[in-house]
Length: 287
Image 1 (cartoon, rainbow, N blue to C red):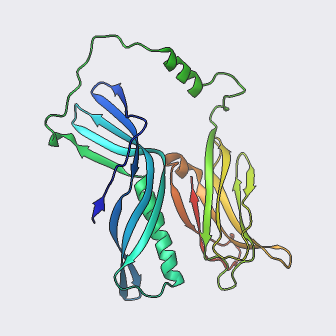
Image 2 (cartoon, rainbow, N blue to C red):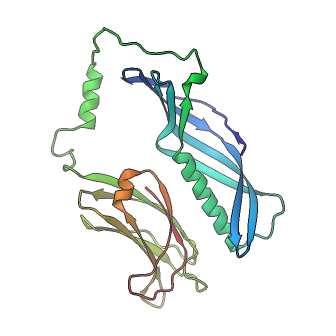
Image 3 (cartoon, rainbow, N blue to C red):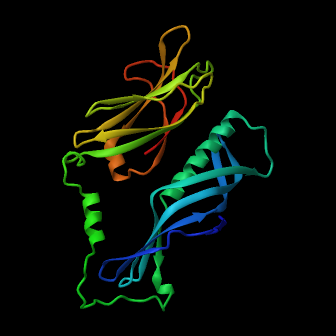
């Protein structure tokens, strides 16, 4: 796989922190445009279809975190927070007519590439650079500034009006899109309902008219606590003849999100328990 990177600019200037003895952390903003070649293989019966693509990441804006352990001569490079990424996919070689199956495959590939870039965690062996410095313990006392005190108050506010209850967390859920709803019948006005079990919260996206692959791109904020177990996503279709038709559901474990809160998921919609629902399609979410 060939990769090309172009760092256009970094601002504000890089920030250096000595977290512990022999450990240095550098953080900076980066703007890059990676490009790569990708090969996708699909099993169809006894045959394997192979497709080649050129992947252009037209936007990669992120906060880069470079952590170095100079005593062990090891480094780690990863992104902080939620990088802004825009991926374009171009098929290489002989191109057949673009079927719905091919469109769905390309959507899945772009989701996988985006998720892989966001979760990048690269280990670096610093022994390759013999001149890389080692940090020595200093006898000079470490002093704090008024800015440190202000930052601490902002991170850990003591007033009841601004402090969250003990054990509570905030979770931002972005409902991006659904693909392939309604089998052959399609949809009139699909929408998605999001429910948290405890504390109970319920929110809903807007409706999208005359599409079986609605694009919502809507954000919702939820409060989680120690007893929160799952988040339920249900997709419905608002039928003009009256009533809401169930189109499928997906359940996400909160325990999984607490381990890795920054992620994108493409979930296959399922039928209701003990119900013989005819469902199809996927739901794409970000946390």
